Length: 190
Image (cartoon, rainbow, N blue to C red):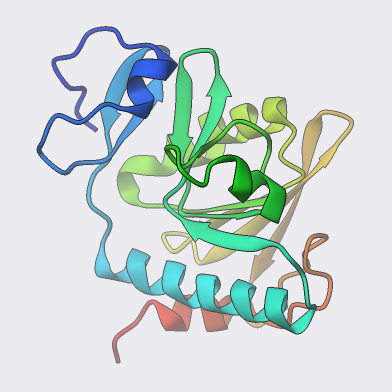
């Protein structure tokens, strides 16, 4: 992870920041942190989960929406980029003509771990999403071939780890029927 030359930026400045290079940044304590481009495996896993969650939203006739790479404000001068997040229609309407950085907690956030994001996904985002009161947070880890589903209980996350042919159990999507193997198989091109 590389920090850009900008030394200090507010959340409001972050919402309109554009250095013209096309890169994505997270805002961490007023500093811009460059996000490395994802791998093809990462894109394939996110695509599979995006498709599965959108299909479940449609099947349930829900008004929820699933978005890729939106921001979530997690502090005064802090904003994280999610791989996937599920929000209500009302939350999306609030940002219809604004930067897609949610200031209220999404219903569900999914992060796919990459070698450079292990500490960020397991430690920093976990504590920031809990403080924001995101009810459900998935850590999809192709490095360890496991999916951790974290459910918020009394301000802290309770974690359940799923592996191999286990079906992922979600409070947000109780009838979702996908296994860990299906998620990681989606990340292969063979």
